[in-house]
Length: 120
Image 1 (spheres, rainbow, N blue to C red):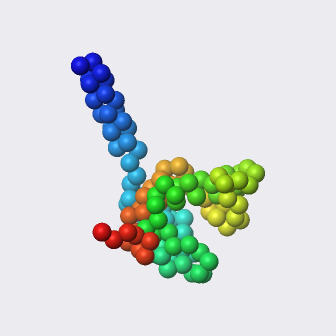
Image 2 (cartoon, one colour):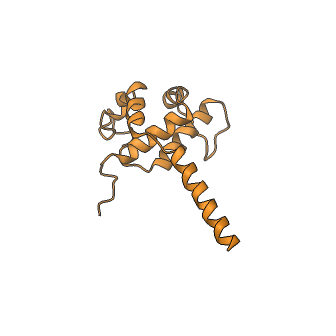
Image 3 (cartoon, rainbow, N blue to C red):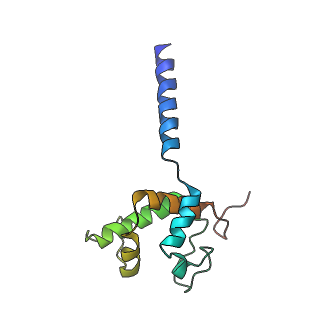
């Protein structure tokens, strides 16, 4: 019985903690606009200004967040690795973003429909 109570308590704490850190989609959209991401990736995040710029709409939120943080590490001078991306434009852009901005933007982009989305 003690194990069951402990397991339920841990589950509730985990669920509550996750909801506290849940991304804010409206704030993500606002940050996307504020930091002029659309100037390269398009207002809909899938119509980039150059074919070499990636489609962001519909991409997995965890992948987007990891990528943005990797650009931040690259701008901070970390040596190149799989967890560091070096790009002068993106490095400068992400330096302005807080961890909360990154989470919100990533979640908002992941929520958008696009050719990357899986239809069910």
